[in-house]
Length: 192
Image (cartoon, rainbow, N blue to C red; front, side):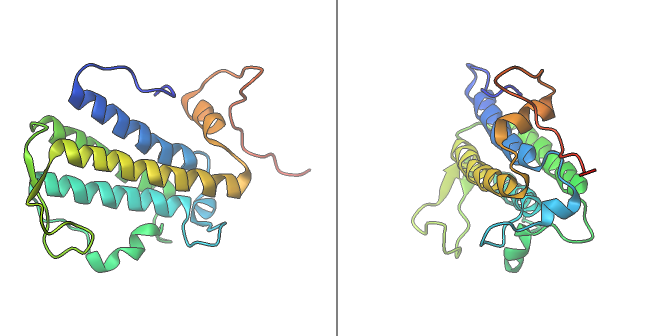
């Protein structure tokens, strides 16, 4: 995907394109990392790039489950664990799961009207008690906002790991040609 979302005229497709762009932001931050690097927590927090991939996946799955009315398979007591790439999983596996959840989200959103109601779960401290339902449109906008926040977290973590920043990573991931003002990211060469 280019650095800018295509100026689509269909609202649903435009919202899905922005959602994909923010999801790609998380993906690009992980581009070229080893499993070990993806688990690094290079700041004072416990966040890692791999953990953010896992969390973005769990968060998007939970919201898509709300849209469909299916019970979420995510364990609320496992919230903090959703920010970790477990030792038995690879970054590639976590990214493949992110892709699968993205495909499901897109299919489910395309099967519904943007104004369809999405019931607000009760008894969740961060959900409003005085709102009965959101719309699919609201959920998409919330997903965009949440993924954008985590893509920003992932950018900071990635830069802390090896100095890589978003545009060179995006250029490398998408195969952009090198220019005098933008060089695609390349892995550091081992010292001789």
